[in-house]
Length: 454
Image (tube, rainbow, N blue to C red; front, side, top):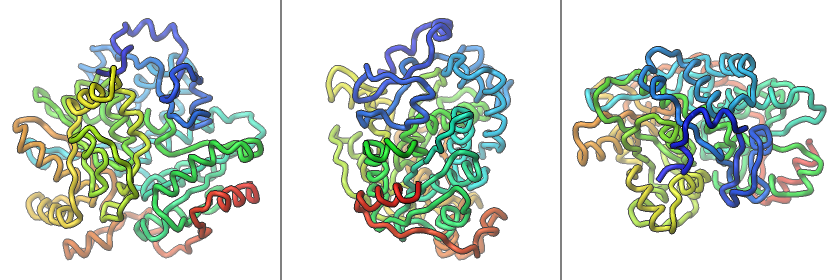
């Protein structure tokens, strides 16, 4: 069962201002501005739209008539219900969505949606740039500086750093796990300077994420620092990630059931796809692809969710053992009991998990067969798609390719024994000096650092 309100007529939404509730307490309500600027509700839940509008059928059926920016505008206008004036919203989106998301066919059954054409060469550029524009808009005229905390397992930090770099009135603190991101990913986090600070945490991504969440709930910090989040726990990251599901659908061949395969770590990307479906995009099925950090595929198989410490893999951005957005997924499919919720979810989402060796083999196989270069995350997605196709032949499957392979150049070079071209934006930072503060996982030390610096 999807969100209980999605079948109401569209005109009704225009009469109701956009509000969001906490997944822990539906009576805990916030406006769009409050939800975006706070990041998390006070009860440590996650914000979800109180009403998810159904987009008009004539819009869905005629996506080819609209540009990427126009699609994004229609989605936001329907969700925001006039909270942001049309002129301002159009300007915001024109500044955020400045690069394409092309759909590339491998064969008649598998297409690849390239989401790495933004400044940091990762899909998270869509969310980070939209969020930067939205937060800057909401922060206009504020005297107090906004400090954004973000935990990253690889690509989020680079996208946020690029999106918020030199944004007036906003400072960004990026926490990343030491030794668990690629060299070029680390350079993207640690070389911009200006309003971007990097903390190299001696732990895992889950440790980084836990420190960020704890900071939002710390009354001492929140009394003296205006904090917000740029992780996918912030609703402003999820909304723009729904845009490219519509953009992919626009480009896809017509007449077949369409599945989306999402390489998944914190599960924000898949949750955004569920939002797109709830708004009326006729997605047939979702395929959740993970590495050995497989808590969600395990849940889909057994109905039992067991979070655990993440393990390091080749597809490092997916090394998450307790994905935050899983609570949003539960909320979307919520029913009268846990088993009802699980049955609802597994009808719409299938989960598959793969090892590093399988991932390397997939990179070789796709390059040999199609001369197409997958990054490790896309390779996991490809493997999941093949597994699903074996069960459900004849459907069209779109794999989200979430990062440019050059971001993992050492591994890709080693696997394929070829020289991978590095885009200019990575070459420009390759030899820059890393600037990061080493930090252990003790929250009190993190808290003290924030108080001393902000």
